Amino acid sequence: MFTRQFLKKEYNATKNTLFKNIVYLKNFFELLYGLGMIQHNPMKNYPNPYYECRIIDRSLSVDECQQLFQAALQADPFVRKYFTLLLLMTTTALRNREIIQLTYEQIDFDRNVIFVDKGQKTTAQVVYMPDSLDDELKRYLQHDAYEKWRKSGRHEVFFKNNRPLTKQSLNKFIKELCKKAEIQKNVTARSFRHTAAYLMQSNGIDITIIKLQLRHKQLSTTLRYLPPVDATKLLNDTSPDFV
Picture 1 (cartoon, one colour):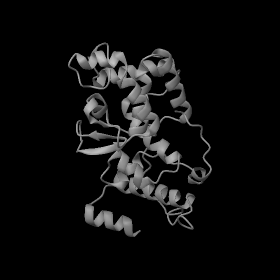
Picture 2 (cartoon, rainbow, N blue to C red):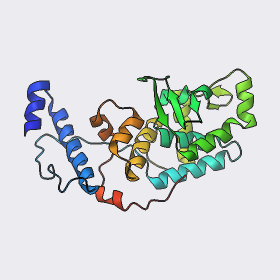
Picture 3 (cartoon, rainbow, N blue to C red):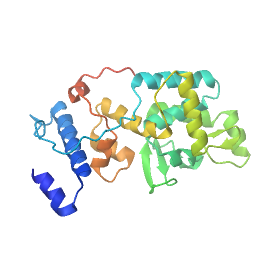
Picture 4 (cartoon, rainbow, N blue to C red):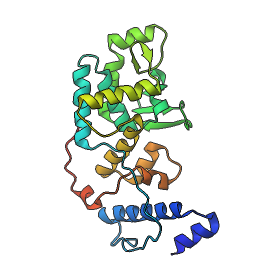
């Protein structure tokens, strides 16, 4: 009740904003309860009198990720450029423009980070790379195909048909790969940012760490990227390692 009154009085919040914040708080406390950090969810039976708005889950499941990785390897088994691109998208949560404009110089293999200073809504920060991505990027960037691209004067990490990726070509590539993988849902480059958040959540990573990786200013923004889950599953998650 206090939260609703505060948002109404101090911020003149709309019904849509009030509804979403109640949903986010319920999910957040359910996550804490499932991880054993609190003894009960104080928001469990809290009424939400505002209209229901559809919360879209844009993330891909582990099985769908596996299908896409297999399709990427079949499409490019030697250079493995497409596989590396998908792995980067599902683990770093980079934004579309950050992926397109990513350069060799931004990657720090010594610290296992990518320095992000290019792209829409981007301030200079870092994102962390898992060892699997570190290994794949090293192999890909040492491949003759990439060396030839770099010696031509280009600095972008990813390209297609001897041209730098664009938002359109990136999403076209994703749709083609989804067709090969027989995935019916509408998947865009943005879906992988949601997927990265979901995969981190599914593996029990603290929400504050997810927030840092996605580089959100507010925790409430991060919660929008996480689909409602049974938080108790996080303690016993045995999902296979898809990379």
